[in-house]
Length: 483
Image (cartoon, rainbow, N blue to C red; front, side):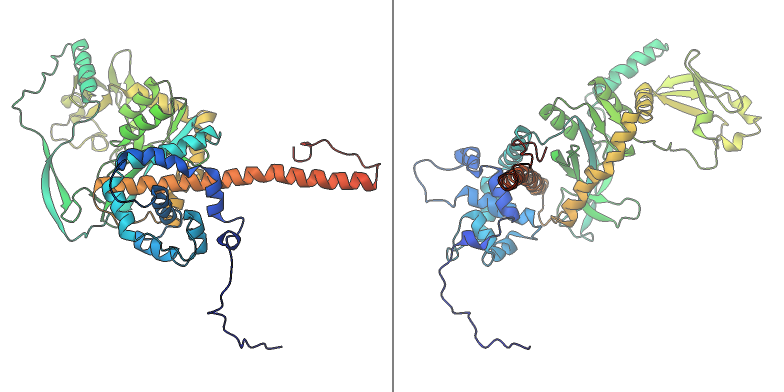
C-alpha cells in the first residue's frame, strides 16, 4: 500500500543525548577507547603561556579535528570543520554538543602552522607508536622499507633550470678510506684529499617556482610531475614504524640512510630489513650486514647492453685477481676509481682479433673494461640470503605489508596529492596521516580482541542455563569455551 508522508518534523523540538546517537561500533568510539588523549597536554604544555594570555582552544580538540581529517581522507581543514557542523559522531568525538560552535578552521590551521612544530608532530607520532608497542601489537623483528611519491602542490609549467652542488654521499669518507687502502694493496698511489679551493661539482635540475622544495618525478609510465618522495618502514602487521620525506627527484637508495637510522634506533630488535631491488646497492647491503641484520632483497637485473654477452659470462678469479672473458682471455687489474670500483681491462691487441668483439665492446681502442665494487661481497651475501626460506618468505610479504600501507594511504586517506607546500609542512602532513592510520589499526585490533572475553562470557552464561535445565550437560570451566 502506498503511504504518503503528510507531516514534516523539521521544526520538532526533541530532548536527546549525543551519546545515544553514535553507534556503539563506530570507528571513533573504538579510537576514543584505545588511547588516553589527555597525554597530549604533556606534549604541548610548554608551547602555551602559563600565567597570561587569552584562553586557548583545547589542544586535544585541535588534534582530534586534524585526526578526523586524516582518518577519513577529507581534502582540507575547511571541509573537515564544515562536516563537523552536521556530523554527530564528529561532535561526540571532540566532546562538543549539538549547539556548541566548532572552532574556526583558521584557528586549527594557525596552531598547526605556527604553534605545533615538527618536533611536536613527531612526538604525537611516537606517542601513538609507543602505545601500540606497550600493548604488544608491534612485530618489528622484520621491517619492510619502500618509497612512494605524493604529488606536490605545484604547477608543472612553472619551472626553471638551476645548477646546484652535487650532494655528498653519507658514506663518502668511509669509501675514500677503503678505496685508498685497496689501491695501496695493489701498488697504486692513494687519492689525495680534495683541496679547499677545488671546484665543487654541480648538476642541473628542474626546480618548481611554486614549491622549490619538491622535485621533478618521472618514472616508467608515470606522468611527469612535481612530487615528494615518502620513505616508509612498516612491520609485519602494517604499522608504520618510521618515515622520511624528501624531494621527488632523490633516488630511493640515496634517502635510505635517514629512514634506516631512525627505525633501527627506535627498534634495536630488528633482524631482517626487506626492500625492493632499488635498494640493492653495495652501501645499503654493507650497512645492514655490518649491523648484524639480514637484507631481504630480490634479484636485480644488471645494467648491461642488450644483445651483448651476458654479465655472468665474465668470471672473476679471486685467487689471481683477474676476470676471464667468454673467449677465455684474461682481463687484468688496472686501477680502483674514486667510486669504489676496481677496473679490469683487456689487451686491445687480443680483442682486435676477437671473433665476438661486437658482442663484447664497441670502444674505439678495442678494449673491454669490467668493474667490480670493493664491497661486492656484501651484494653476494644478500644474493645468498635471497635463496633462503627466510628471504623468500619475507620478500613475499611485501605486497601484503608496505604495498598495502601505500594503497590504503592513497585510496582511503587522501595521500595522492598534498595541498601543502614546503618540505616541513609536507613532512608534518604525512606524519599526522600515518599516525592516524596507526591509531585506526590499533583501535580496530583492540576492539576485536576485546570481543573475545565478551563472547566467552556470553557462551559461559548459556552453558550455565543448559546445565540448570539438564544436569547431565557437562558444565565447562570459565575460559575454556573460546580457547
